[in-house]
Amino acid sequence: MVQVYGTVPPYRGRGRPPTRPRPAASWQYLQVVKQRDVHGRFLGTRLRVLYGEPHAVLALFGRSTGYVERTHLTMRHFNSRLSRKTLAFSKSLEMYCAAAAWEDAVYNWVRPLKTLRRRVRRQPWRRWQPRTPAMAAKLTDHIWTARKLLSTLIAPNT
Image (cartoon, rainbow, N blue to C red; front, side, top):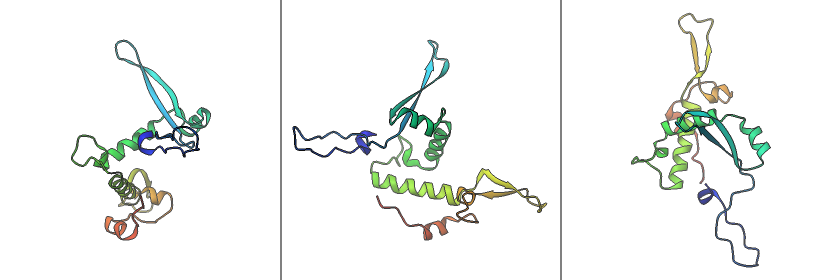
């Protein structure tokens, strides 16, 4: 992470100029380490704060990172550039950013989620109203098509 996203500190005029990237002061990074016994059976987890103030990081992420792991699984499932050992693996940061932006847009605007659906009471032929995350956030009132998404959104700058 530091090699890719870190920044080299500015030279202050004394000694050798810095060349190694450093993490930013605003980084907050939590690692969940699984504890196992000698037979490999799971005993529990230990949280380790790598970057940031420990109390602030634990307050932000909580005691469990299950929701983050689920989000990463969904991202890997829909964006083949995140899967290793495939022909679509991203070697260019610009192409990865474009693919990640597209995956996020489709997930939030086009794809209805079962966990966000609402029960319909006044229509006996239909039990559920499908909704997307953008509909749940009240950013839109309908499910978008990929055509509408491509004609509406502007590609992000990298």
